[in-house]
Image 1 (tube, rainbow, N blue to C red):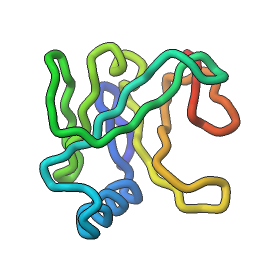
Image 2 (cartoon, rainbow, N blue to C red):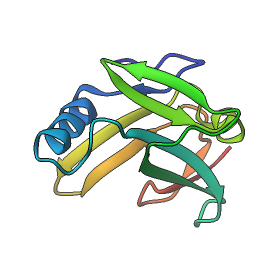
Image 3 (cartoon, one colour):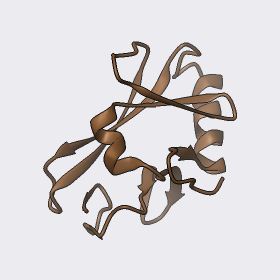
Length: 114
């Protein structure tokens, strides 16, 4: 799925991984993905991804093929247009963020600056 400004999208690989986690019983159906940004990391801001089942006031909600992605409003200012992806290659395994707003990222891809 292509990133769309104003949204947070989920790639096909990430959708498949989430479906796999649900099928294996590692992720309950009532849980959604919460993405956020926190200060820190070698580039100034760090990505955070959790599984959650409680909405908070001001949360922004995006649905991708039935998968709910939730983001607080402050983090969304940095994550608008971002795509959540999943990699299982030799350079690292796990969820990662493809963020068009990042002007600089660290080598590991876990932090960025705007």
